[in-house]
Length: 351
Image (tube, rainbow, N blue to C red; front, side, top):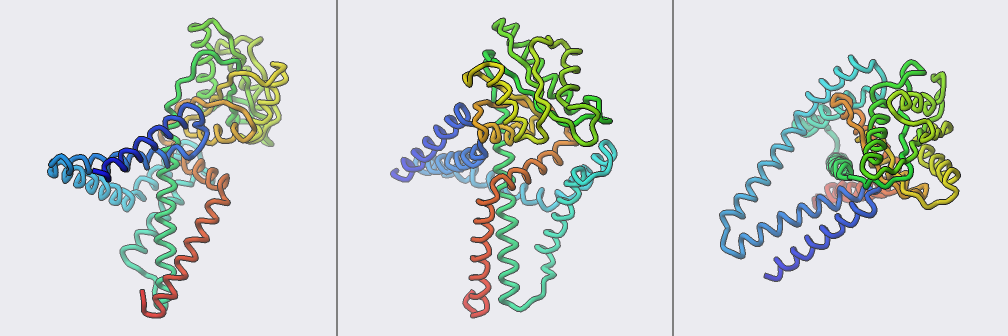
């Protein structure tokens, strides 16, 4: 029984921690790790409870179900290159050829190479080097899959945010202009989401928030994104007196930093309630950056066309890896050390 009690305590602690983060500090990629550890603790607790109460059959059912799901996931990963190739073709047809639009193709090629490595083992090297290479590649692939899964979990959990209708400012993040001057579908979705919350708050509490449109002028754009965004918003029901423009930023970090400075200046204080609006896949990273500039604000996401999501999520994952590069470099170093040790032991005939 003490094992059941211990697992129950672990599950309770993880659940409380996850709930606390979701309510008070969701601007972190820790969300996915907490959620998945909490789920594992729950599964372990259920199996233990079934065994304690003599329901071994039910415990076996859970174990088999988990095994089936695991096998299905593994099979899906092996065959996922089909989806990645198809998605790349769809993105090219709708968005044109570009490096950012080819990320799913790159992933698909990577999956094919991994499949070849696993099933055909084409690497023919001396035993110590072979052991080193295979160990390092296996650990690296497992680490990438683990971090991708936890990043996806964090992104999905972040969507469970339903802000109160008491906001003073609504920041809408830019996303580039079509033909250098027009608001496209992706950016239009963000602006529409911001206006919808703006109108919803007025309807519910009669409180007007100010819409802050954030985005500078790119090298291929005829005007700042924020100016085009404001014009679009005015055409779709926003009131001019309730709009501000931040027209200097060129990336998400600057969006948050410059918008905070603009809001502080407009309000004459640093005490305000803020929500930001961006695409759903982008809310987590934008939230992390808002925390880094000292702004307490959570985000709501606009819908993204399904065909575009895989590329967008891959890009977000890579951006988050770069943001936490020190941690990932340390993990990479540990994997290299472990692989060297395995290679040495293999050379000595021990492993």
